[in-house]
Image 1 (cartoon, one colour):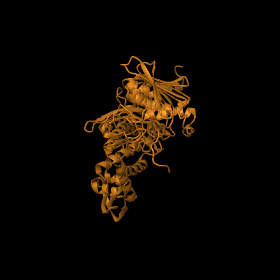
Image 2 (cartoon, one colour):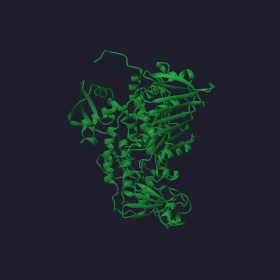
Image 3 (tube, one colour):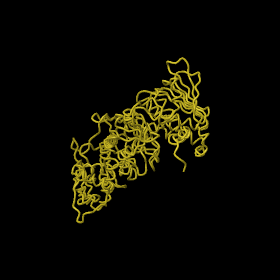
Image 4 (tube, one colour):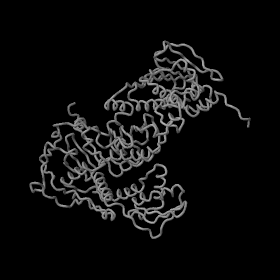
Length: 623
């Protein structure tokens, strides 16, 4: 070991570069964020060999004053914060003042800029062992151009970890995509090896924003996405953006973009909240797709957590978690078949769902229903009483006894308004899922609506209906507890024991009664009746772990829902069960009134739509 000494400026900068400059994409991210902070409205990015040989970024921002240019390449030099108070409420994307110094230490960097007040532009570059800067005049319009050549030319150990040109370019392109999603008001142009790859103009308005989303994420995303905009005035939180329908799931988490005050982040609180919101409708092993924007007071979020600024820390993490979860949970629950029909979404069967056919876009065709060959008006349809469903929710006792008495398919039809037991539909009021015309192999219901043909998986649809009614009955009847003959003793951390002691009402609401027997010991004396055979100790540990990390927990509700889901699956109408037209129509009407009816309890689609245009295409009509 040598004696303590100061590191040279170049070595210090190269060490800092190891934190913020991992690959060409990291350079582009830092430069683009600087440009956006400078008020740029047009960004031109030109790269060669995936950004390894050249990265050139030009913006039309405010520019950098001549006297500030040499300082711009120094460590910890920034115009974005002045005091500690500014750091506690950062509103800019960058603030550390390390990016340009770090980049210049591992590349050949040239910075050219001009402000609106200057008559000429100036150029600065850092050279030599001590990173001394040289300043000279240049020709340049208002704004800034940063040119980075030969990345890692002086650090061969770092350069050998770079991937192929195409791989590095894909990472770089993803960075630009994320920033383009965060700033719809900015134009982005990307050129690679002299070929234009991306050209995005500034947009305003929901429709224009959706067009940009479609160009970046694909038309399928926006066709099967729901727009939301929810504010909580009391807490000052606002969540807006687009979430994919549950059946538009992905095998990878590759279409998940979450922005906090314009900054894209990866946060376990956010991830957990979104995952919980989709937990009841997502197919096992699949990932939801979303582009969401959270706006809140900058003082409520700490962005100074990680050098790359990808992570943040919410000062009120439980508040943020609950707001995101409740908002998305309600939006997903409120989705109905009529919403899909009204907006022209691809009907709820998704292209990405396992074992599901490609999504079929739905185009309403007014006045062409009769061309299918069915005339629903001539079919007697039951609309008075419900031959399929009595309409009464099961009692909590019935749920606990695992009795699914919700649907009695043998019950005779109640009389309609005319006393015949059947009622003719109103020709000008066709329901979203239309009217049943047939049953296929005892598995699928075929119905026609104004758009065309509707296909329904009757077991999956009935399973969701039964499940939602069971959940409602359970909530109304509350959670009942039963004492354990032999109390369960748990060894936990002192922090977890403190949480259990501070929030007894939380566990009582979930059906548990806990007692603290020591600094790191809890005793479980009562458990929910429905979970009497479950591992009570593990459930309590999971709840406590969630409380420590996220500030809240849905573990018990999820366990109860899993049980109700199993009961609903067994209680739903089985395949090969022959249904009458009134029973099939009653099922369709219940689907239209039931939350999350687009998916069964396992996340599979329950229905899909073939429009008249698609049917005509299949049979080459009009060609």
